[in-house]
Length: 88
Image 1 (cartoon, helix red, strand yellow):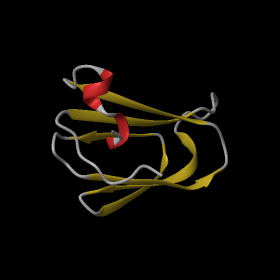
Image 2: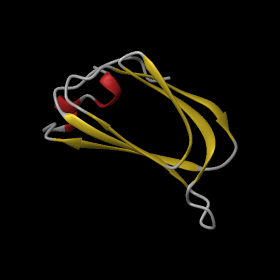
Image 3: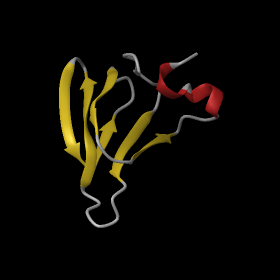
Image 4: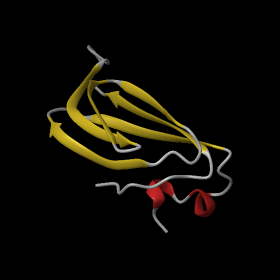
């Protein structure tokens, strides 16, 4: 589980279903909290998280098929400065 955190940069987070016949099918259900509001989704989804926005925890509520998660850091600098997932 990814804990609540924020960043000093903007981030785009992609959750992509890996079924080549139905790419919109995520293959599970994810709960992603933004500023305490729980977002639930079960389809391929892109989230834009602006600098300073508290987000997390992230929970996989259901998992039935392969999927990909991709975080795109915009202006975060090096990997150590970006601290993926708020980890130190």
